[in-house]
Image (cartoon, rainbow, N blue to C red; front, top):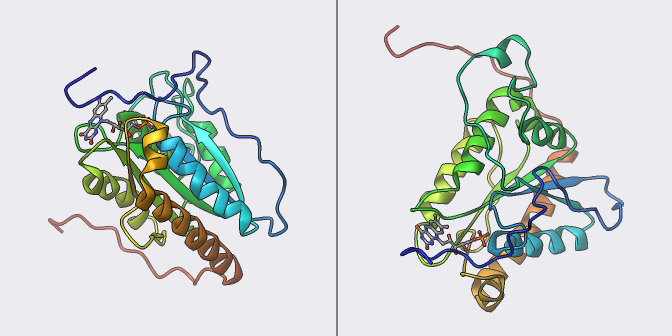
Length: 233
Ligand SMILES: Cc1cc2nc3c(=O)[nH]c(=O)nc-3n(C[C@H](O)[C@H](O)[C@H](O)COP(=O)(O)O)c2cc1C
């Protein structure tokens, strides 16, 4: 056990990146929310929080799909610029990021969940988000999104902030709950005992369902002319 406390959630031997939950049943609305588990624990605290959001989505007629990033290394962005020449894909095809972009294209909303590591999101989630948003930003742009943080004790707000920065540079409305989207625990049982955290996740699921339905009903505005300048000009 580390000083900070290593979470005790299941670390599946067959932890395959990109493994997704089988949607239980297709919902009437045809709307889907992709819930990204940025923990190496497939069935840990973060997944427990995402499951609560997913239950509420399903109850509201929105299909939840959980996308697990796995335990294999996730490459960070090499800033090679290849995705600017071939938009929509990252040239690094040896991990789950292109699959994440493909799944994102089929979703109308997102929840990105992370354990708190030294007061910030997991490296795998940040690397995956940087590359997915840089190479496949159109798959995410303009769609409602929420961040969820699971910590044993502290660091959730900085974690949520880091995740949400991807949304707020991508025209994505940020979905919230009646408190910041955090749960606390060292094990899934702890998370379920965090009654306030559980209620926050349930409200988040309901708010996300409303957000994706509302955004699906109203067309996106005509884009304003965009300027791209550096501060020195
Ligand atoms: C490398 C590492 C760093 C951690 N840093 C923190 C921290 O800064 N604050 C905290 O409260 N918990 C910290 N934890 C504990 C986890 O964030 C916490 O147990 C979380 O709920 C685990 O979620 P998971 O089961 O989905 O992986 C850390 C755990 C690890 C492995």
